[in-house]
Length: 93
Length: 379
Figure 1 (spheres, rainbow over the protein chains, first blue to last red):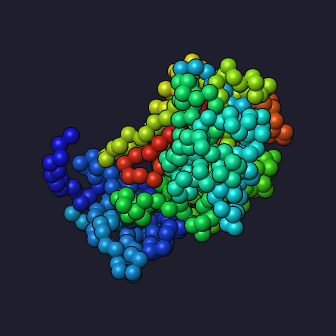
Figure 2: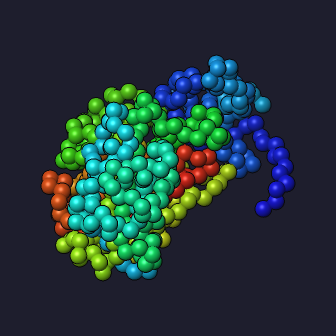
Figure 3: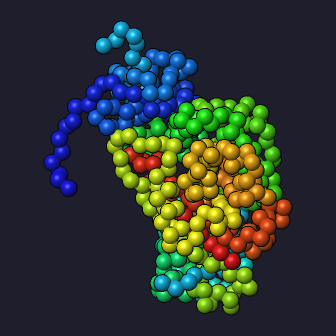
């Protein structure tokens, strides 16, 4: 129950646990987008979007890697940037 | 703890009432329950009102319309389980002897949001990154399809069954059958889920009157006994979680069956939280109606339709009856009361003696669901 928090550096690569092409969401999100859960090796599951990929090319448990992307826009139209994932291409390391 | 029974039940047809206030949507349901119980207003000792998004003092706003005031009124928010939680709190109070009678209300008016997905709490990390409820269930569906060979047709057939049952329920929001082809051709919401795989947005209210079992006979010739009441919160996990296995429902069902001293084979019908079609299949397994991986077969064999071994959602469920979220828990209980009394006409489960309600609430990162409440009833 300590109040002392510490940072944990997570791997940038993980595996795609599941995903969905989302066509209905509140204003601000660019539709459709691919929502996904990605499992990282540190036993952390993160939610974000899959970007720069054809949804039909996605496979269960495939390796994906993190990158920064614009995921949507806030109430005044400013871009919302955060981490997202994209499939690891052959030759990536 | 002493035995508790339901002696009155009422609800308004779920639908879209944008021109009505929350209180005006709800009071006719309360009146119906009070009249059904034949209880004098002055004999209602306390009220528990569940609403997720109905705003402050919903219970007071509703009950002043009926002149039921001056008593303890407790308003409860617990997402989609708001009124199943309210029911449990009322049950605890009556079972403990604090009150002899209590009124439970579930109410919601979702048309005030103008449609679309349910508004979730933006300070939640996943919500801040675009999580919406259909996407969460869609990801469960995709994983289950991958691991157990479930097909899009199997998921669509849940909607077909729900709509078929809804035709027979005059309180249902949708009363028209759909075909598998129509479900699959409806517009995509969160792939693989289409519009007809999703519960509609809408408004509604439901109410029940409960009292101690010893007093029940003075109000009702057919009191419905509460034989088990359970509530849990989800277990917070930051890492891997099997999304094909709803842990909170599994855990809750096990506790409840032990408490009631019966098993899933003793349940004659169930109203479960089918907010999205995939969910009902997962709950067949979690509630013990079939083995893991066998849900689609149970459905295909007709066992969960009216006339089958364990009819699930004879009311039409959330998919057809509708899901004004805070009202759902009590509305499920109203259906079980009517079924156990034999009042359900074409959708009647013949000879039903034991019924189960199952209501979850979610939308918070790190939980399978934030809350799940399950109840068992018997005549």
